[in-house]
Length: 225
Ligand SMILES: C[S@@+](CC[C@H](N)C(=O)[O-])C[C@H]1O[C@@H](n2cnc3c(N)ncnc32)[C@H](O)[C@@H]1O
Image 1 (tube, protein in one colour):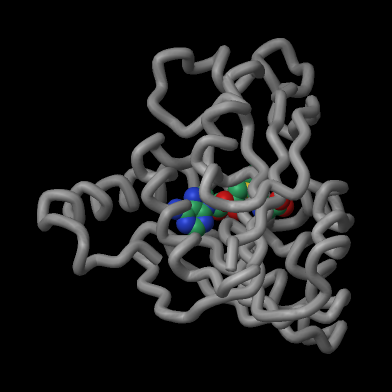
Image 2 (image 1 turned 180 degrees about the horizontal axis):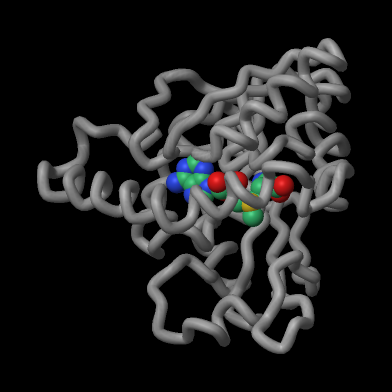
């Protein structure tokens, strides 16, 4: 997804190293998590249907799609969906579901940071994924997503902020956990259509066995024409 021609050689090798670290540390966990269950449930994240208030059809990219609960909803609503995730288990599950339900979903296994995608989209969804990236990487990715969006196209960004268990567990991390102002500032050149902040229960447990909770930012924005 990131345009490699604009990256210095130093950045590319750093990204590749980060990819390998994530592949072995994180992706394997998601592969395991998706193996015989759907940890986020069958239904789309409840903010996703709000997208239909602003766009009803078009080419869609779902980044970090998991096993595709949001991709399935959007394909059923009539979008032509490309789902991208580094979990092969997640993408395999989605491929099967799309075949069974006869849905228009292309499933790609890959890391968005090294995924050179020249296509443009009418809608890009990135839900609960940006906290896996370092702050600088996430900003670069969003900039690239903007470049690959058609005029009047829509972004749906769902991201955790610092007010939750993810941050409490690793307060010194450099991952992208934006404040409300930070996310809105990133989208200052777009029309912000909807924004809210709400707490979400996560399927991951804390050491005491209770579920983690995270404050979450939900943003819908339109590229100005
Ligand atoms: C918390 S899950 C969210 C899944 C889905 N968006 C949803 O809402 O159900 C985060 C997903 O991001 C994926 N992911 C993390 N880093 C990624 C990367 N660099 N490239 C592609 N996928 C990534 C993980 O494999 C995982 O499936």
